[in-house]
Image (cartoon, rainbow, N blue to C red):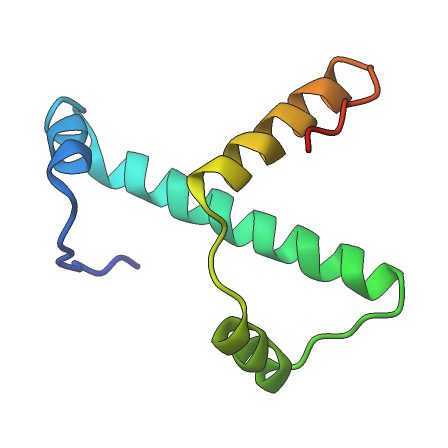
Length: 92
């Protein structure tokens, strides 16, 4: 079963999707990837004894700000170093 959902997107994202022959497939893939990442985080935390409740998640979202562009870039650099098989250098 499928549903039609209308969303508002930034211009650059909308322009990218305008170029794609199957916008629904692109959006579905992106949302599923996000769902998979969230589930992987939940399983990783549960494996070390941390079981997040919906209330705990709501609290964390209320006190933690989203990562900045610089923090996301640093996380990406760190991940790429790990995937390349080398110990990431910590930047201060």
